[in-house]
Length: 139
Image: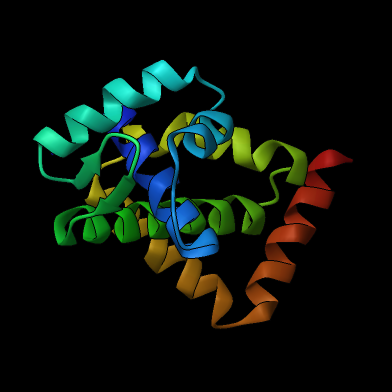
């Protein structure tokens, strides 16, 4: 299993490839706000661990294993964003909060959060009732 740091890189590489069609070391460094040399070291480790194929000066592609993990990581990230939005977390705090918690939850917890998100999404009245509870509690 990849470490939390490796997960951040895989997720970012996956997102870049999905949006731009490719991921360069400079793009990854910019997105993660790290030095390109740090990206190169991590990319080499991800290549060694068979999450991606990397050729110096030629770029990189995710392996099927890396792509599968990337998809799961993006799903986890988006699910947690949706969950925090449903429960009323301020929009400007959601991304930072997700970044802070996503690596600390088991996949079982992620699945249960998914169940809860589906429960709220299946009946808009549930979300409205939760929002009313927030309003009542702020009084």
